[in-house]
Length: 306
Image (cartoon, rainbow, N blue to C red; front, side, top):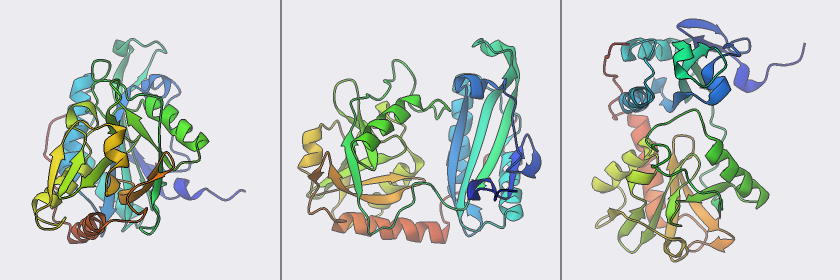
């Protein structure tokens, strides 16, 4: 028998039942498999606890409401499933992924054909994007534009990531670590699974939240800067930016659940700053790591009916 891949080891939770992850399954007629018709959240765990669980579940619920999917369990039940899953997998540090799909139904795009939503929760010991804090990220600006709000609301964290994956394919072909996506007007938007900040003097700039998936890690960084963790006098400006604003920055970094805080070494082969982690990035790396260790971010879910 071949060895089980690391990411398949342990247990998963499917519709409230705990099963071996290697044999866990959903129907081939599930509308998420067929059409990407579902939503998800990825949550970092430290000391055996999910970080910022309430904001993650609240966003999951908002995404479900937008897509008119009724979660099959309430937030308290999902929180309990996550706790039990971490215990069964003996996982102290890692990541939880919660997926809610519209469920099984006749294989046509009519959402009325899928009436029973599916819940899948899985855990991993590490993120596929984890990297040493000493290594910078090399970005490539993708020609594939971020899907605009007029086409699909960016605040919905849906299971359809094809737009982001095509951009990632461009970055891979260019020999970069990740893609930087622009909006239809050519302004900076986001990475496929992360947000970006750049520094000019005492101002940290980041794209406005109305055209991106404004991540929970992004919100955490905004909070840390407001509390002074980035250094005295540092402030954040949410503003429209072009490539010029990136190439002229003194430092740049990306943030996300899987990436944490990671400095940007180059964009399209052009070195950002001196190509190393800048002083503000280092402070925020340390502050974020400390915050995860303290587990002070509100992690209790809001109980809501299914």
